[in-house]
Length: 437
Image (cartoon, rainbow, N blue to C red):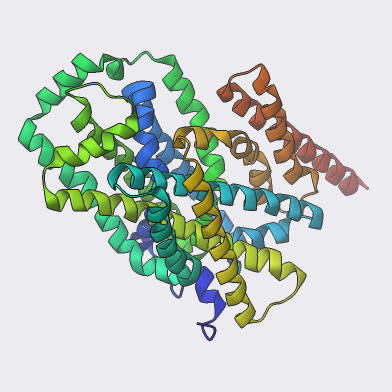
């Protein structure tokens, strides 16, 4: 392994076109959060919330695709988001933003691991620790050691399994039971799902745009793929990814309706074992189980590769220039430490994925304006630009004492946006004064 150039771990060996680019992005963004949060959103906010969840994800991916072409064009020789930050920020600003990136990356890995732990507990009658040990060991060898090249080899299989599950299983059931019995059953037992004047659902959708877009905007795994996509295909690739991704949460929510239509339920997670019993086909049950773990393992492996690359190249690499052999050693140690930490934490506690998603919502919303400033500006940005994300997130979090979660997230975005706007206006005035002299 030490003889392999570390460049292949970060970027693989090929440039991606539209088809494989879509497959690679879907393998990253069809996650445990997609599997668990989409039906939970459906139950909490009704059909409007469920549909909105899908549309928000699609919109944010398409929107980032518009920026991705500029990123690829302006930084053609870079490999990671850390490379760009190092080029566009002062030293203090760089470390500020890299710290935020490392924290949010580890947090995102934690969300995926929680999803895996919940699914293991729901489907298999084994201790979560044992199931997570096997699962994270697999992710360690694929993402921690295998890197981008190994992820590319498995991406096609992963996406095939995902679409086979979300298409075949609902069709199989609805052919057996019919559509109208399902509709009538849901209308009888859960009429709130069809309530279309749910203002909370629209408020959720609006705030989710800020959270999802901020998450994509600082996702190291997505940035890695931006740099290995063919420049002329980037916008189309992200547009198709968004449109295809939108169908997956909806299809997965339809799987839960198979169980919902005839009865009430204790909580959303209690429905998964019942779904397995409802399918009544060994092949389809196996397909469903493989789908769940394939999607979650792919997402964790992609994030593990990206976070490890960020650490080795953009943190360790800043202090000294490691040899190729040292880079591999740091990669194995760091990715192994992350997997061990996830194993310990998830075995102790597994909170709800939707709550986890919005727990860091203030940071994701506050990071939008600084990142847009960094991407769209031509000059090196001062420390206050990346630091505005911390100010915004902290300000929004403080107001949680008097505001609800969604309003606090919006406030975090507003604070950082105002600071960045002031900086841009100040820079504009300085440039005009220099030009006039």
